Amino acid sequence: MLQPPRSQENDKILMDALIALQTRVSAPRVKAPAPDRQTLEQIFKAAFRTADHGLLKPWRFLVIQGQSLQRFADLFAAAVLADKPDSTETDISSIRNKALRAPLVVVGIACPKAAPKVPESEQLLSAGGALQNMLTAAFALGVGAIWRTGPMATHPVVMQGLGLQPGESIIGFVYMGTVDGTLRPLVDEPVDAHVQDW
Ligand SMILES: Cc1cc2nc3c(=O)[nH]c(=O)nc-3n(C[C@H](O)[C@H](O)[C@H](O)COP(=O)(O)O)c2cc1C
Image (cartoon, rainbow, N blue to C red; front, side, top):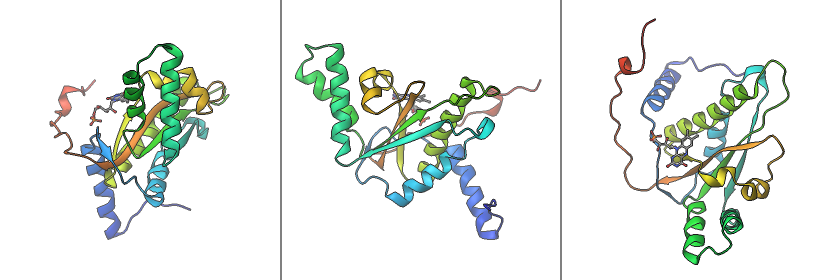
């Protein structure tokens, strides 16, 4: 059975987790190499530890990298052409470049289950938590990541092309890779600004 780490050495790991939680920032620009399989597994294991009412696991993920990125870009292009058949080459290459802006994309999919005591809204929150855990784990592991959505996340051409089933939705594209450039410096958030005693 998995137990939270308790050793002296692992106490340091717990402290590192807090630092990651409190200092995580997105990496708007990432480049190759993508995280390797082992690193990605660590990131997914963190995702799976999101809070989950009823233990329904109302999420799944697609990993897109290598040759599949071109097919992903094709889907974005097809979506734009479906909306605007007279799109210019510039429009098409602009949307393709969005799909190709990272060496690896994780598609986060919410898949709510029929559960009388767990409303769909809670299941969506759980799936969102999974993606947030993924971002924090990536940051802790030195992987650049950013959660994006935009019109492609709800476009029927993209949803169908990625194999979404009825009731499922894309909650985010997490673009991952090696940080390119410098990360945004953090401004200290005073706790009192957002928290009140009641
Ligand atoms: C559901 C969701 C969708 C988002 N979609 C986009 C997006 O399409 N484009 C974007 O630039 N940022 C998007 N963001 C915000 C970024 O992921 C990021 O959180 C934001 O730029 C603030 O940076 P930080 O994470 O470093 O604080 C989204 C965030 C969430 C939670």
